[in-house]
Image (cartoon, rainbow, N blue to C red; front, side, top):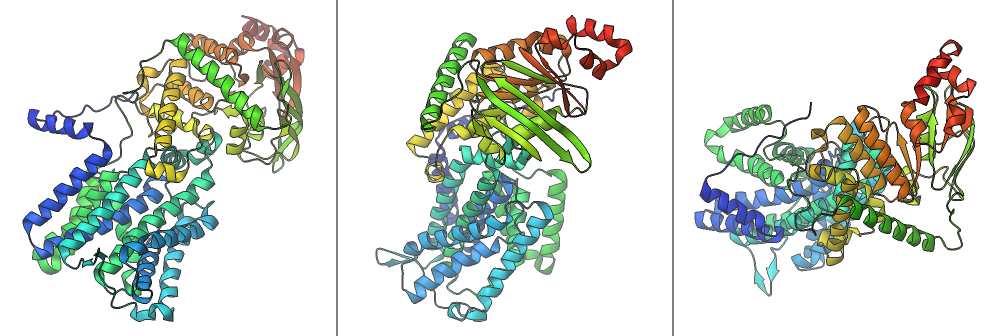
Length: 634
């Protein structure tokens, strides 16, 4: 059953007008409005204690935005985030007290130092997940605190004293209201950079890794590199908050950077809504501000606070302000929609452009022409313990054909796919695509060579919108740098617009443009299959591998799929197909390879395969051969 989206509650007319006006503003303007309202509200209240709490809320919000990149976007559990806070604080403190630098001059170095620390933490932990990752990050946090405690130059257990407040043009900023202004300024920078990353190809890559790392890697997302970047970006935000903390407090020591701080920042992310920028702000207000508001309860305030948190998580387990990636009008602002024929022509032209660019990049390499061998598999062997899943399989796929691999369940078909696409490394044999070996390459590198694939079981990023799923497939074709994404440069904006337009065309190609803004989980099974096909095609492959694309489709949908596969071939894309529907395979294939218990038992044209006695016996046995012939010949 297809889930029905919950309709948005209507607001009173006045509030609705304000909401529409606010939503129409660019994000930087919305951030400015938010910061002005917060600053004016605290100033109007005119209470030093309230101002000091507001400064603390802003500091924790910056920390939360950084940890949200690691935990909320990339899905990596980090229990040692206080280490980045400490490194940023000590960098600024030592530069201001020993080298007499201005606070604002120390910020770049504090950010660089913590980003480097993030790389040091990230590199050895890239392949870890879950409990192992949590233990390593916890150890990193404690090691950093112990190292600082025993570092005499940094004051040892006594810390660094006499850190001056920031100054601008000779004016010293020493009051709580001054610190509020600086904290809101830094928070605004952190919010803008986080928003830009979230809505960039880097942000989509992080979320794809969080949703399904295996599928993300298989569609072209370099998961190890992106996880390293998550630690680096998260560390930079922690350094920014730590630098401000040092100059605001005026004295720091190792007791300010304990495991409890890491848990507190993690709590505000979970409470506000993992992966949500507004959720981090709300979570900071609740975690930092609410205990202060409960001071009137004296010793019972933490008990009351804990009870309120438990009630909140029971009522709203996804967080107070969760991140919803559904978008009602994802293509708003783009040029008008194209007809299906125009979309196909645009995709065909773009496919030729990509192939020409790839050909120029491969200096001295001759690409396979129409009808020539594009993929060569020779002597492929894959073994799991004592089970030989693929045994000395060899075949060739020519450019421009639809090549099918069939066989009973357990014949080794998907294992062959996994070896070709780098998911598994074969025990023996060679796999050459366009004359170059693929053995030993990671899946994302194979995708960048020009191979795409779908999966036997649907592996969409289910909590991403349909159009975002397709945009993730375009990841390997765009070269936007991280700094361009953070600054939202004109070049990055052009790339994003082109990516969005291309995602629209691929969804038109499979007939799902109208469903683009819905979550992948809201589509029917057959439509999810179509989205997976569009995502595989979005990387502009020269060869695409479809693993049982007709599974779960009714006869009408299968006929439509046959048309889609033929249109894919018309785009100049070679197709390798696995499917159990013999009628579909026989109607659409140019050549067919048959596997049985990992061994290639037949290879030829459909009319040859459907009369082959070995194939008939492998499927149904000798006594039911006539039924097999009738079934696959219909």
